Image (cartoon, rainbow, N blue to C red):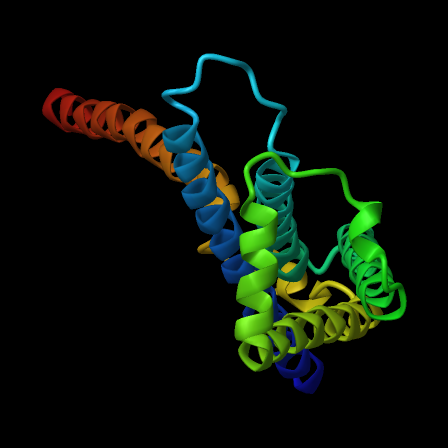
Length: 217
């Protein structure tokens, strides 16, 4: 009983932490769609083809990946399957490594902007200006997302160690109200009806034979 309560608490915590990553992914997608709309509005009157705005599409891909990772995390938390949890933790760990590599490059490399291609949309420059002007808020948001990612890995490891809930499977086998066993009960009920229907004519025939015997006597 205690193990089931602990497992339920860990599953709830993992789903809650995973929801933070999902909200961050949706925010990234909305921001990328807003930038894409502004980009198409700015280039609508131009008659020549511009390069692909890699920064906008990178944001869209990152947001979609985080949302898909959130869905897989909810499935892994609900089923407590070791393989699903392992895949989920590996992908989250890869994201943390990439975030750490980019952060290290930005803070330690003075020419880090040269590592990225030119952005024709200009949204990359606007994003950098926004980060500089709201550095404290962005710092807290980034730390919150990283903390949620680390906590999701820790909770995933704990849930993987606990394993799936085997007791509920045993309880469902003993419970006669499980839908999987209803056809068996239905068949037994039908057999009982058929048996009673077959026995009624036999009893009525024997009763009529006794009446005839008494009349003949």
